[in-house]
Image (cartoon, rainbow, N blue to C red; front, side):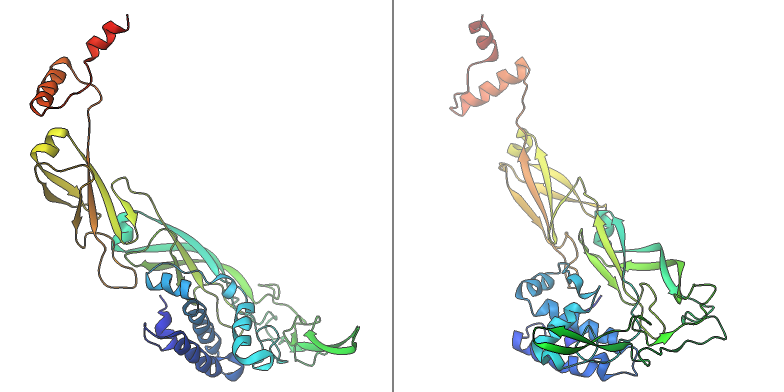
Length: 366
């Protein structure tokens, strides 16, 4: 999983100004337009942009520091979010590509992001687990090597745009005639035209393929956690990186525990005599084992016992939460005549004045 602080090269206590400076420096160094011959530059740029989007927002940063899953919205599905971030630093003409920062030809399209769900028990979420995922994803066509052209018939330069992927269009506005740059419709911005398409992929360069992938889910994940497997999504066009695979974790409810962050709550209902006289109590643990606690005489309802480090592991951090055992005392709803007589004797010894007996109430109701 990505460590946002490591991605930006800043400590966990970095100020907002330090985070902004780090992103500004890295954005200049890693932007794809500044590294046209490095196919990994785009993936690296997306990584630091994601880190900045989370850490530059105090609320998102606080949630991330607590180990919670932080969504990054449309940053993964389009580059519009990156444009907005870059405009804050470099203005409208700082870089080319990514939706209009300059006039450079758009590069090959990155692969699509995919999403899958995984169901876990609470015990599996606590210990971590390996799961084999089976899914279908776009993969590079092996017949044409992703070019989309039939072998022996290479793509040719688009005659409309001259290989630029963009054309200039004159538009009449109330300010007069203006020249704008738009994507070439003849080649869909690719700069090349396929005259004879591949018989296997029909010119797409991609085919659907069944995949099996083993994913390691770390201990401490919570319901709704999204894990990103970089580069495990759909294949991109020739020369473009693949997309990412997102695994959304669903943790089933457990009758034994209530989860609150990294802590687990377990409620125990004792009888009146057990609470008054004390009892040795077996308490379940999340891994299926049990432990014993001694409940002393005179324990009151609502008493909570804390078992240190018996809760959930802290995701992305060291340590574990605690297991809190809350005591409830059961008050009997129905009593036999003998039980009621004994309880009234107890009340009399303690100077209590309970309501009149059930038999007397029945006689009065006649």
